[in-house]
Image (cartoon, rainbow, N blue to C red; front, top):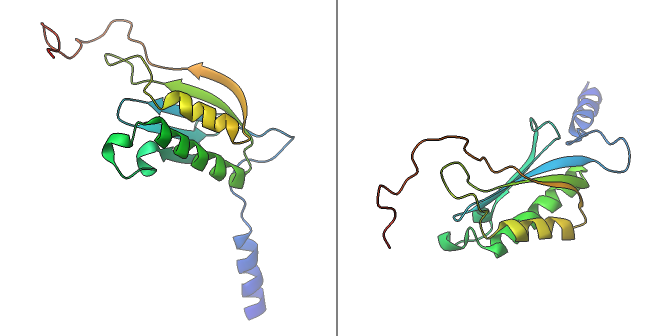
Length: 150
């Protein structure tokens, strides 16, 4: 009875995470949100429904002011690449976005270094797309009638 229980436990522990490997390239989608305060790298499957890993620049540094820095974004991208290797994903499409909407449409300082670090860590890059939300006609932008006074 004990031997059957141990064999059952061993079979249960051999669960492999990640996608089924059918060929040489296994793709994921890296959603990179780069703001002036932080950089998020969220890797999902192609449908966007299943999350493989999610790392931010703030998880890599101790200081609040360095969360959006290119260094923090590079460290986050290296952590993402390490986790994707464990799962078995070796190629990614990149969807990059800034905050968008009524806020700034320009990506923050960590966007370019995050993409460069993903490419340098042996991940094949499929497509790079900018998916910043653009307003068609929207609510009033913050700042008031006379704008932000410096």
